[in-house]
Length: 452
Image (cartoon, rainbow, N blue to C red; front, top):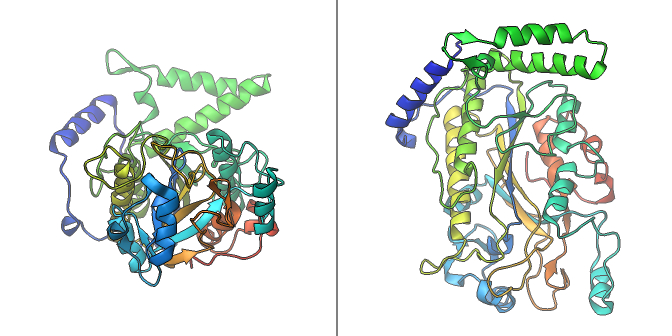
């Protein structure tokens, strides 16, 4: 396997930057289908996405009710994008997602949120009339960190649901790969999540000193080899684990070629942009399909992506070019998902790779004067060749006095477990029982068949 030292890597990087151009879909070759390969790509809309303005009622009284209660947060009715066989429309910046939906490759999973048990209209009405809380609420309901953690644990006490799914699948190492930083969803399993920020470097490139042909890597490995027999079990375990990590880095160094196509880097992005993260995933998948990894990557993988900046207290998801609003968030999500699935199609694995979104929570139905505040239920999106297009679950009524609203927040009608369980079943070809991954699943009736 080809390995790169620091000099070669920097030289190659400079050449790449100097010659980087966008490649149109017409210029891209088509690779052979990926056989038994399947992957899930989880996109976290960090901060709480205002999905009420991403899927909007288009017709008659339903739109009037929406516009009345949303006030300055409402989208213009004529701007909404048509969706087949439904009276709802997408945000005007969701053109690529509209195309996926209308050809049956994108599903809206309606009104998803953290629930300990189903909540009835009677319980919501009683809470609104008496001022009492709804019983058995999730912990720290409107807290970003707490709700993200609960989404990623999905009813488990200490292990992320993706880590459990990986263990249950028996696929071993490198199932869970994060390009968006460490996360609880992939933590706690038999194998660590593998966090990648850019290319995968050989171990010796980290320990090279001046002059460049001098390396302390060999001495470091020798020291670790001896420490595996240390009387202190913690020291011995660290040495063993570190040697395994070094071996993995050396095996995978240089396996990823340049991207099939360049992704848009977006605007006003925090940290590594969504496009950069998705582009990196395409490089990993292509390395797997081409066999450049020499079998290191398993044929089942779960990727984690973090798209920051969705806490829109002061940046509403409108579509008014003359104003400073958050439409660029929706626009960039839409373009990035569209480009990603274009590449999957070119790689021959459009049917075998499914993207899906999660978010801390939805937003308030009413305006705070500048944007929206922390809410509860919100819509999620799954896309790919295996997805059955449509709206799944129950869309809430967005209006004054809605039976689905507790105060000014929407109460979820679909649990996190109900949303994630079909994804795990599809990913594992039914080999992993969702009930082992999501211990609270049996509390909720009904299964969502949005993926085949």
